[in-house]
Image 1 (cartoon, protein in one colour):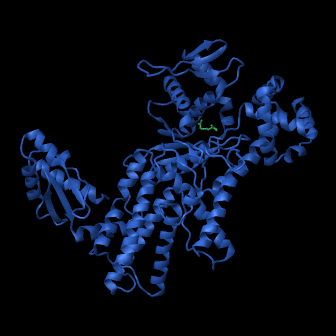
Image 2: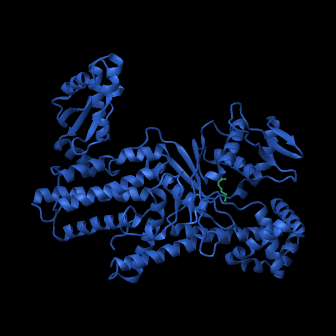
Image 3: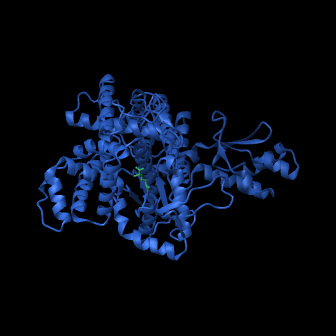
Length: 590
Ligand code: ARG
């Protein structure tokens, strides 16, 4: 189903062609002067230069060809030769009607669906989350939904950081603190049987408490660090004691993370860990060596990835360290292989902090050299940071890094306050009120993030994010809920939706905004920029507000009422869809 912009572009392009002019010049854009026209084409100016005729003359010629098109209520030439197009009410009505009947509310699908994997979130066992993980989750979830909605087959993978030095540190720290755990680990490592009940007692808060201490100690105390490295090597060799304790760490962490992410409306299809590719690493290293890609460098094995014409020297990929361990980039390279075998993605989107841009450039080049992916199939979609008022990456009150659960609870608390201030949801049952506060909180956090182009950094400002006024998530939820309540009242009054007939200016504007949905999605998809969807959602609710203020609905005579109700329910469907693509859910009422 084509949008009006596409349909009009075709008409104007045909007019250009019939005058012997390059058709692509006819393409229309939304009008700069919505008070005068709906769309415009500036092509006559470019055409004039090419054929050496006055632009107005060309514009007039085009206008003549377009005269009589029933979809147009007016074609006017403005200024030096702009062609202004005004749609007929009938054309707008027809398009609005088609959107109303469309389960995809006016959005097209991609012509050639692909298999796409979105690597996002990237939380780690024990290492606390920071704003990079929060943004990765919010943006990645939206990109996953957007690609899926446009027709691709999409998998979202958390790429759980569950392997490496931090695990050795943590195993050592837990053993130091709990003799029963240490005894069981040692026994298992020695090939004996042991009672592992003590493992079950290790909780997430133990890990949270112990990791920062251990990490700090590992930086200053070389013996401590060496022991942690040894344990890490033992774990990677699958020594049974380390391995079983590690599994416990992994499980408690994953369960808690899944719960917290779910509360944020972020749900992964896969929780593959870095550990899952451990078995692939040795054969991969052999293969890389056989392909002559590995170079010895002071005891380490590296792949050189710099290319002629690089503006600056890109460091090599460190595949095996001088101590013989696989590194972060090694796991990423092996993961590319693993994904190729299991899913064979045509596109992998890494939604990760911009600060890792070089890491990915290096890994991607190595993967292309090794033939594990075709050039261009791997894409890093980076983003800026969410900052505190001090301009540095946001930290919680205690100055510590972010805990997802705390951040959500803090936002929920603010949402409850806001709901009370606005007198919303007060007469609803307590559990429903809580559900609403949760949805308001998620909308606040996500919309504040997604309304900016992802590359932009922004300041964490809970007061602004949670406001029911302005360009915020809560404002959009409120608008959607308002439409729901209108539609409920209509049902109670026995009023039904009917054929759409656009007449009033506010109705025209609403229909044009509904029509712009597909272009917004296409832009968001092509540029991996959910902010285009956020912008559309905001515009749509503004257009609805104007319509609601200018056009009586339930009081109108039946045919008009039916048309306006159909417009209202179509707006709601599209708004809910847009919000869903941002990962935001709308409550039934407030
Ligand atoms: N766990 C990593 C971190 O905390 C992020 C993982 C991103 N994804 C990847 N394939 N490297 O920095």
